[in-house]
Length: 270
Image (cartoon, rainbow, N blue to C red):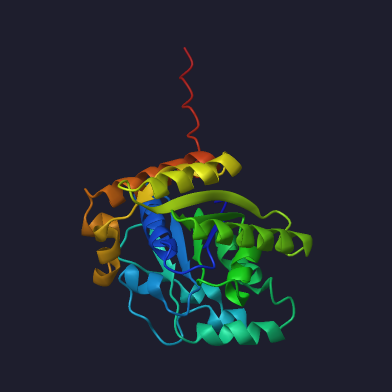
């Protein structure tokens, strides 16, 4: 099975990045796409949001530093067809220690290769920390496509330029020549304000083919779900947030052909 790796990143916190990583992964899993969510954030918000307890030694900390295998870190989640590599506080030390290793921006790509070789997962989603440090840059180095979660406010536009410059640096350095901007997810859209609409229009004007049609609404239910260790589909499946992430998953599947077309059945000979 061919594996496609998506990195969800933004150097700014509180933009719906982890919410998008968790619920998009769950939405893909609901479509029977074997999906692995990798939590790279030392705060381990994606781990707790999916309902998995943090465990000492269950993260990519050791594999990134050359000890142990990433496949041994994979755990089941309450969501069918969705697995997780959790995070833990030790991952914060990796930000410093990675800089002392060889090929420090390509470590994650090498670590994930053993998982890709198994052919077990169609999609791997990397949830990066809210900073463009070593872990996030490794996320860019390991990805096929970058997905940017962008909050519907004007300050977010400055951050967009910054992360796109880092994509170019990764490519220019030869770390990941194939990395591309897979898409921009507009998050925290408030239908009551002109500002949200104007920001979406501005981003679509500059990157018309990259912005997903689906916008993620600002809703209390999306904010509440992680505190119960549930995806939005388990917490409130009929909410606007659940509908939005289902639609986003459909767009992602179509854009990147994540579901292999079925071969037509041969007609019996007359």
